[in-house]
Image 1 (cartoon, rainbow, N blue to C red):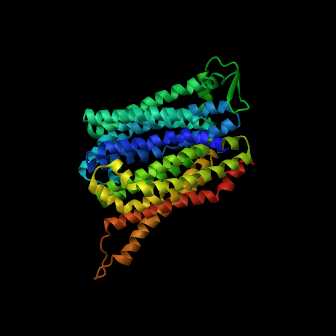
Image 2: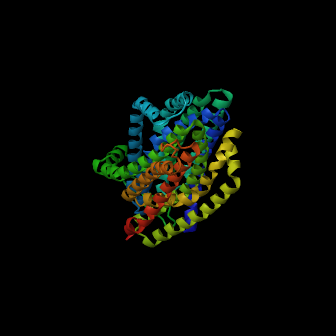
Image 3: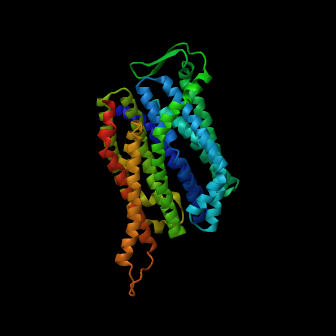
Length: 476
């Protein structure tokens, strides 16, 4: 089972590490320009996190449904899931393009920063928004391959996409001097390149599933490979599309994914609030927290490699009704999570400041960030369970539990943040005349990070409690 986990997890880790690597390169490109550029890229990226994370069900729901269809050897359903996901992705993308102006104005109301920072962030937004069809389409393609127990294909797509993005960003900014607009344009070009390659590989590697939809016979051999026999000569698109977009099937698709959507709205809300709250404190704190969150993103994408393996395996074993393999895979995934937590905590303790210097050459910014490095050390301890259980529950399509645990964790975040600020003022900020003085930037930011750690702990804890009832019971 460990070999199976690693065979799925390692390509996903390579895939996912290219994402923070890309963000780090963007940060390096603009970080050597000015602190304002760091703030602008942080706000611009946060806008798209707020948008795209809300539609993360296009990947997660697709992965869970496809993995269960794979385990049950229902490959006609896997074809329908792919078409269904692409259709929903394009519909959402069209809506985002139509509503881009009101979205930009709403973003200005949410985020705070200097006029210069906000103007650069809007420049970034109005260029990158045109990548929406490709970005959401990539979610569907990636989720489908993961559900089909294929982690290597998304890995090669992601590597290609991110190389294109890095090259374009460096070229447009360093050579053509297009500033932050060059970074955004590089992302647009890369997303469309990745989508074209992804769809091409779907039909190159799994095209026989589509051709066998009408008359072929598809099964798994003894080694888990897909074998197609019978008539598999042409794709009957009319029948595939009609079956895929049937209202009954679409309703089931949206029922599960509505919960994932609401769960992701909470996720976006927390991260958006962190960026907005940092900006309200000061532009310097906004830049500091942007640097510190790179540590979190790096760890999260590594852990998500094992979470994606969990999606594939949990969905497969539930579809096959193999309870023993399901339990074993979950136990081993959690053991891998503990081991990685130890490794990252040690690495961050030894090389935290060196990581900071990769992101920025501003010595004042680095010095100001040192006082918050403690939070970097406890990110792995507080967060590893949340990441792994997300993958496990996605594979089980146990979306209601995911939604409810996220609701509680999000409420906990805001209670700790606002309650912590209030209590600190009452206890330590009272002046001689009884009035309350303003909290210092350091106190406000430490309270913000405390709330974030509580949020991560609650996510993992609540899903752990529901594991037996919501996941293991489905393989009975």
